[in-house]
Length: 349
Ligand code: NAD
Image (cartoon, rainbow, N blue to C red):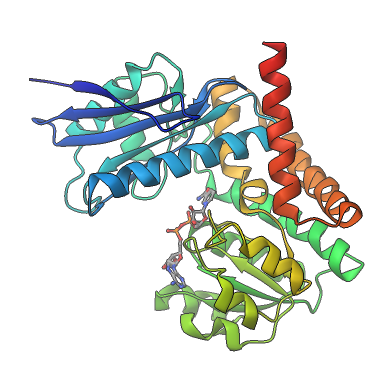
């Protein structure tokens, strides 16, 4: 039969939602283009064993919209999109499946660029890239985006520290990092080098041992985060860590980390503000990886990537000042900045 594509009803405000199936290759995927107002959509491909179609659709649409915001704020000339492959990345993923996925991406003719996300490696992208020019984040090109994400979070964290504590010197500042994966470990190394006192937590022992041994980090259990005393919280695991119960117990005065969707719901931004905790919106500070991927899409060099990283730190400073002057949450200010960019681009189109 080969590849079958079906256009599904996209939610209001979304441009396209496509289902791609190839039974022989074992592919069942969704590709969502939220917006191409600022340029072709770009966002990673996630492979996950979703419990239902509704769950997969909810995830791909939420993530695609998030990419529109992230790419706009980072000034990348890219819109927002995302894809999900339904299945278990450990047991169901094959080169044939990834090649079929590449074919599916190619049918969108460049309105969507894909890259790695949860469950997808550079090697998987290389299989997809055999069938499309719109698979990026390839080894030998822009490569692993994680170190760039960590560098962006680190720079923004310094801007946040200057705002909250009056200076960006991190010597002796207590930083708790949740999740020592690709981004969290790289961030831990940078913070250690800058003299911060680290508290780390993860569900895997090996990463904790390495951080304790090499970075002099203190270890806490994943469910003990909110019993600890620290100055800065860096969520680098999964989303939803900040909810009304955890915010009520959080000792930090600044939150800056890589995890996507850190706020369990929108109203948590106001709860943080009410407790005088400064939150740097995740989609602003974790854009380093997509900046790196964008350099590959646009054929730009290292200097371009670094300038864009400086750009997100500059935006954070602007956002913090506006939030203070206008007595609003940082999330509110950041979202408005993106809405204005989209409106201006639509008007001038
Ligand atoms: P990763 O899978 O390499 O690392 C995640 C780490 O979190 C793992 O070590 C895992 O064991 C740990 N973890 C999971 N649940 C936990 C829990 N309950 N408590 C403590 N630790 C837990 O992922 P990553 O690439 O480092 O990404 C981290 C986060 O940053 C994710 O939310 C990801 O979506 C986001 N992000 C990553 C990038 C990137 O470039 N990799 C870019 C933007 C956003």
